[in-house]
Image (cartoon, one colour):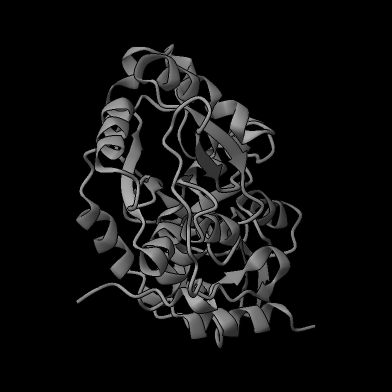
Length: 313
């Protein structure tokens, strides 16, 4: 049975409002870029919290190296929102995009986006989501969230919303009825900040973002703890327009599989600009979609209800 994420009611949590991404009807695209210097492939990065201030600068060394070694040229841009990056690929305003797993699923449903590569760090192609709380909160498990408040990131985010909500539901906590308050903070960083500032009892974010906050001294680990950790989630994928020529797609896969041999290790970056070891352009798409099926309880109706709950005064 095919995976359906119902992208048409995807929510932009940054504004805590509903954004409908209607599939472009009768869009007649011209010829797609060929990847030459005068006709570069257009790349859009989803906003994230793990890299530098300008995520395109984080990626530039890798893409420049691919241009030098493989003759494929790129024009890099940062997307303004998760939805904008989905829409950009599906309306053929961009040719490659780096997504979270959920937004990849949305692009897959909307325009049959094709998996290109995932990043690899310490031999792993997976990462983790988590829910965090203060050590003196009295919370010991997700069941204890009943009657408590929770901050989350963007409703389109895999690890700051979708996986945490699936974890809460699997703990038999109804996030709409049982949580006293939901704060849709718009990003991992803002979700963690809400916890630190005492505005919520718990917060959801990726382990990458949590560890970054700890390492930077933003979060004191003596005062805060991990309440729950997710199962492994496939690292955020880079996707490409399926309509690119077969020759170019093959060349792109070869380039991403091998570019780590031609770039200084500290310059290899993954989703959000975080440092990684290499890229895997052979990661099975079936594994990605299998994980997304586990999020089926986090429906669009649930998202709408949570947005309404977050707007309550």
